Structure formats: structure tokens, C-alpha cells
Length: 280
Image (cartoon, rainbow, N blue to C red):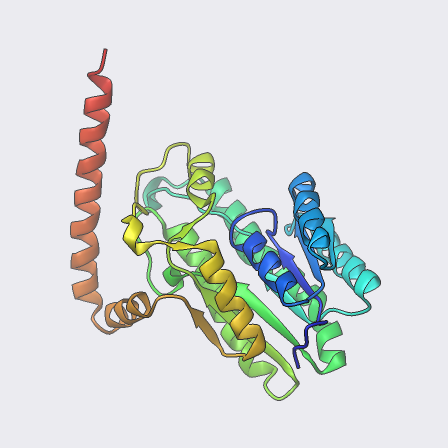
């Protein structure tokens, strides 16, 4: 059962949802192991947490590496004496049409988003199960339930996390260890910048009105709430969850709506490009 002294290991903790969750967990007294590739950013976050009276360590970890994930767990347990929760949060987006998608980039996003989650979670599971207490959280997405044009690769990795998280939840039922999937909607993070870096140039598929976005802190608060009172799926938007449920129930209607939206976005981008090209 969660207590204020229960340690948590978070991947992708150098920014965005991972960092916000690390800070939120530290505020309620949880020792936090922040893991990511950008060690300098982790060090800054650890300093901030410790100056506020919390406990934290920074671990350089590339989740694609099983050895890195094993070492992250070893350092967490070695420093805090145990680990209670794992938040598999590391991931990024890639935008490209199915027909012309770069094969290596497709494999890369699965290595990070899906296999990276498996690497850190399977490193931790023996420890959690032996203690008969713990919590595994997978940072999936609302897009785990439906795909968008040009975002099939990202959606598929999030669907894989969702399916594995649910299967694990049932497989370990009664062990004292919980498995939850987290389903954010569009979040104000570095995600869009990462999409452009991976894709070359964003096609604008995820252009979302500001009113329909959320902060990383909103997701972090939902994660903390789930740690305190475990449930299978964590959603931060009821309207998004309801809309996706309807899309699953009426797939043909959803396809028409998505196709119309996609055509509108593509036309808006073409107009912007023409306008940009005509400037002196």
C-alpha cells in the first residue's frame, strides 16, 4: 500500500509529464528516482526537490537498453532500500503516412515507446511481486483507442502499451501489485518539438485548440491520485474518453469525422505554406 515514503522510479523524467510527476510525487513525500538520457536536466530537478526537503536521485538511462533499465532499478533500490512504483513514461511521437513511413523510424519508435516500457517494467516486476506490493503505470495515450492519419506509428505503440498494461493487470490480480494505464490528451510539453525532430517537418495532425489541451501538472496530479487509489485506466478528460468510446462504437462515423478534419488541416497547412513562400 502506498505511503509517503514509498519510492517511485520514473522514466522520461527530464521534462514534460515525467518531470511534473516527479515533482508531484516528491511534494507528497515520495522518494523519487528520475531517469532519462539528459542527465543535466535530471540533476537540476533533483536539486530542486532536495532544496524543498524531498529525496531524489538522477539516473542516466536509455530505456532501449535493458542493461540501463536494470541499472536504474539497482540504483533506486540501493539508494532508497526498495521501490514501490514504476512510471514508464519515456516516449516520443513520429508523424508520417503509412505508405511512405521510414522503416527504421517505425522500428525506433517501438523500441522506445513500447519495448522501453517493457524493459523498465520487467526489470522491476520481480522486486514488486516479491514484496507483494507495488504499482506499475504505463504512460499510454488517448490515441491508444483510435489512430489519427499520419500518426499510425505513435498510436500503435500506445495501443500496445494499453494492451500489455491491461493484460498485466489481470495476470497479477491479487498479488498486491497494480498495473494502470495513463491516457493523456494533448499536453503542453516538448512533445510537438519532438515530433518535428523525428518527422522532419510536422504535418500538423495534432493541431489542437488551446482550450482542448492540458498541462503536464494535470496528468501528474492524476497519476498521484491513482497511486493513492489504484484503478485500471487513468483519464484526465471525460469528454475525450466519451468521444473515443463513441468512435469505437461507431467506427464508420468516426472515420468520416477524422477524414473531414484531416482534409481541413491539410488545406490549412497548404495555405500557410503558400503564404510563407510568397513573402519577400
